[in-house]
Amino acid sequence: MKKAITIVIGILFLTASISFADSEVSGKVINKANVKKSANIAMGEDATASMGSVKLKDSNVSGTVVNKADVKKSANIAIGQKAKANMGSVTMKDSDVSGKVINKADINKSANIAAGQRATANMGSVTMKDSDVSGKVVNKADVKKSANIAMGQGATANMGAVTMKGSDVSGKVINKAEVKKSANIAIGEDATANMGAVTMKDSNVSGKVINKADVNKSANIAAGKDSEASMGSVTME
Image (cartoon, rainbow, N blue to C red; front, side, top):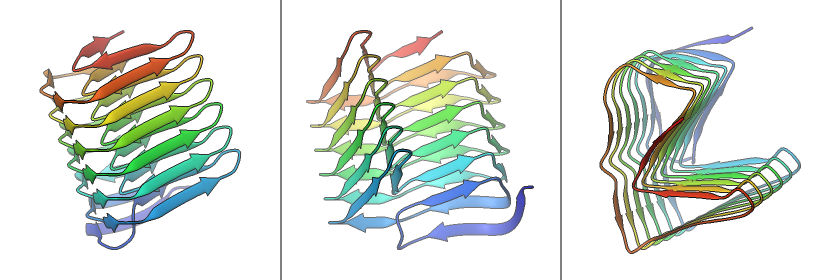
């Protein structure tokens, strides 16, 4: 049974992330975490490490979801068979948002690493799976001098990207991420690396899809049997 939460404005200043599971939120969800010179580590078979992020799972939000986390000189690491590492990102699974979803995270000189068979590393990105948004989806993350690495058989690394799978958006999808002097690396048999890109699979958008990502002096690498590397692109399947 879902928990009911009434929030006018939910703001997180000191801790790293906001996470909702099986919840109902009536109001805005805003993360303004300030993380500096810190380490966040999750170890275990199903481990998930989130730093400066907003995570929604099996939840409904009647309002805008905003991530404005500031992450500097920090490390976020998830180690385990199904490990996931989220830094300066908004991740949604089986959730509904009646409002905009906006990511404006600022990431500087930091590392986000997921190591494990099904590892996924998200940095400065918006990822949606089997979710619905009644409003715009906007990614304006600023990533500088940072590294995002996913290692594992099914590894996926997303940096300054918007990725959607099995989701519906009633509004525009806009990626204006800025990536400078950074590296995004996916290593594994099914590895996929997305940098400054919009990728959609089995999804519907009632509005424009716009990619205005700015990628400068950066590297995007996918290594593995079925690897795919997308930089500054829009991919729809």
